[in-house]
Image (cartoon, rainbow, N blue to C red; front, side, top):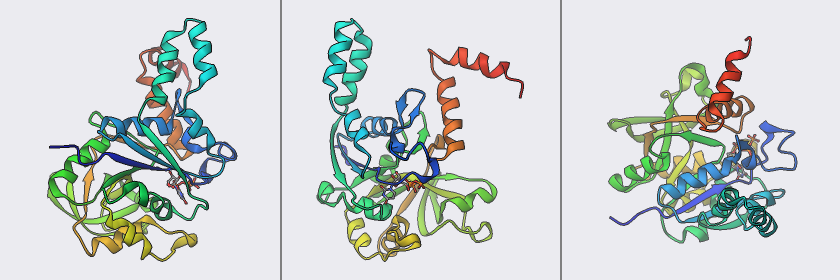
Length: 289
Ligand code: UTP
C-alpha cells in the first residue's frame, strides 16, 4: 500500500513561557537535547515514518529554526577546508532532511489556530501534526505506530499515554473504548480535568493524524481558555460526527517544554550516547545525592 501520510505539520509559534528566560528571544523548539534541537528529533521521526513534506508554523523570533534547516554556506566551507568531513556531512544532512516550508501564525491564538494555518499545505490530504517539545523515545517511531492505526481504521488518530495519579490533571484526557490492545475509539475528551473528573488515565500527547475535516471543525470552534482556539475543542466537535481513535504509544514520552521534563530527557538521551554515555554515567554515580 502506498504511504498514506506524507505531510507533517510542526506548530512552533507558541511563546514557551514555561521555559523563560531561555525562550525570551530563542525558540523553545531549538533547545538542544544533548546536541540536537528538539524540533530536529521530531522532524527525523516524521521523516522515518515516511513523511517527505514538512510545514513548520513559526512566529516572531523563530528565525533560528529556518536557519537550522537551511544550508549554512560559510560553516560548510570552513568544515571542508579543515578536513572535518564527519561534521560537514552531519551539517549538510540537516538541510537535506526533507522539503520544509514555513508559514507564520501572526499571533499565538492557540494550537487549534496554529494548525489551521496548515489548511493550504494539507490541500485536502490527511496529515500528521507533531509538537516538538513532546519527545517520544520509542523503538518504533511514535508516528509510525499511529500511521499503522490510521491505515487500518481510516480515521483520525491521536497519541495517548497512561498517566498515574493526580498528574493526569495536567493533560487532555480521553474517554474511550478499547477496540484492540492499545487502540481506543474515543467517545469524548476533556482538557485538564480535576483528578476526580478524569474519565480515564489516558492523557493526550503531542502527536496527531488529522483528516481535512479538522479545518472545518476549527472554523466552528469558539475561542476557549485565554481566548485561544484549542485543538481539543475542535476535536470534540469532530468526534461527535465521525469515528476518532487513539493509540497508546509504545515508548517513553518526555515533556521537554517543561524545565524538569527537559532535564530528565537530557539525562536519558545523554546516557544512551555511545560517545558520552559511559563518562556521563560515571559522573552521575560519583554524585553524592
Ligand atoms: P504549549 O502550550 O506547550 O507551548 O503548546 P507554548 O505556548 O509555546 O509554551 P508554554 O506553555 O507557554 O510554556 C503546544 C505547542 O503548540 C504550539 C507551541 O509552539 C507548542 O509546540 N503553539 C501553541 C503554537 O504554535 N501556537 C499557539 O498559539 C500556541
